[in-house]
Length: 152
Image 1 (cartoon, rainbow, N blue to C red):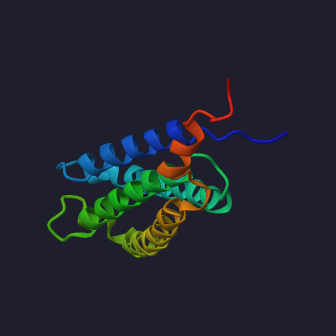
Image 2: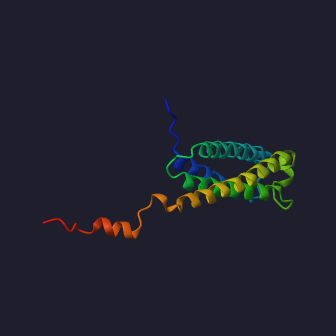
Image 3: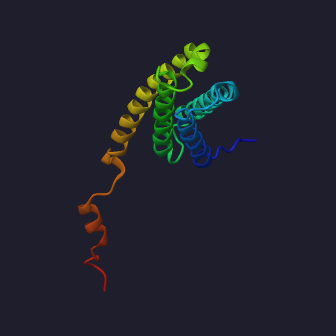
């Protein structure tokens, strides 16, 4: 049985989670209560985005694939920005997150690299979309719509 993936809803929720996480890391939270949870959330979001990206990369015939890749790209950029905020020395949770800073840096690098890959896929996709081989030109449409001369 084939698995149906609901990219719209999955990507919406991931982007919403990143937005919430981005707001949270800017707050002056109690590190003892929230540092571990923030790292867990980043790990979950990282794994989810990677799984969605992997499936999209392998599904080159999926309808709306380019649109979904753009959404993944936005999510990856937002996650990188959130991780950058966590790693800044002036971040309220910087000290509490320092034991996880190596892992956070690795996630950030991986997503930055993926962003470059997605941008390349999107540019190739845009080039494919601009291929006029299967499009009907204005002249062809006009000739098809002209009445036949031999009709009574």
